[in-house]
Length: 94
Image 1 (tube, rainbow, N blue to C red):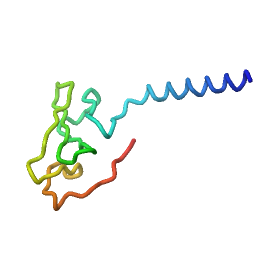
Image 2 (image 1 turned 45 degrees about the vertical axis):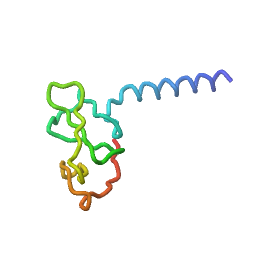
Image 3 (image 1 turned 90 degrees about the vertical axis):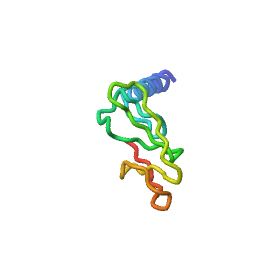
C-alpha cells in the first residue's frame, strides 16, 4: 500500500512539474504575447473565424481584430478572405 501511494505521489509530482514547465500557446484563446517573437504574425480564433489576434510589440495583451463583413481569417494566408475561399483547417498542437 505504501509503495502504491508513493508511486502515485511521484507520478502526480512529475505531471505537475511537466505541466508548469510547458509554456506553450493555447490554440483556442488569446495568444500569450509575452512569448510571441514574431509580432507581425496573426493568430486565428478557432471559435470564431471572423476574428484573429495580433501581438503588437511592447503590448502585454493581444489585439482582437474583426475581419470585414463577409470575410473570414485564414492563418496560412495570414489574411481575411471571402467566405467562399475560406476552408476549415484542423488546429495544430505542440
